[in-house]
Length: 225
Ligand code: DX5
Ligand code: ZN
Image 1: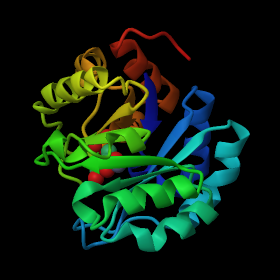
Image 2: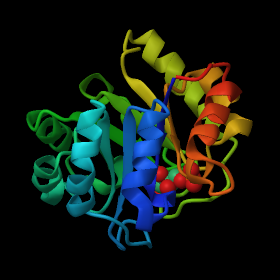
Image 3: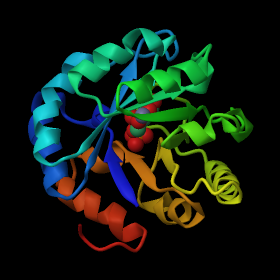
């Protein structure tokens, strides 16, 4: 079980410090939410932020993942690769030629991931599953941090996990994104989630980041990293 802090919920004035704290607490995957105001209603970050985080991630050999909530993501794959993204996740709903996009990500030596919105059935992944490293199930409608977890995602994770087992594709990670916290970690981990994206629950300013990460790990029966 990996925890991928979503920096969308971080304090941007102290982004470097906060990401360092998360890395010190043992995380090895940083999740960068990229939004374009078209595919989702919000605007967020681009390659400059990825480039700024790259030296930090390198120091810990951490994966720097971009979650591309943007229309026609092919236009930006080169730019994110040059900035230092080592995993790129695109939305099935935003890609006209998903197979080509996944091949392009692989060609840039990054981990290809494909994301599904909450209302998109897992059948949409059927033919691309053998080509990807990560299947990301959105557990909120994409666009904003801090939204409530959609509980039906637990069953969706279970169904995807069964499909991966049936096809001997268990190496494909199941990543869950949106509203993930200590109260739903265990159910998700038990049904097959292997990467938990966590924004609000990691960067909650009420407690130190290391405490928040420990709480997430403890919730699924893991000790400190
Ligand atoms: C939502 C983003 C998520 C989100 C996670 O559009 O893809 O990564 O920021 O944040 P929380 O954990 O606060 O839902
Ligand atoms: Zn995300």
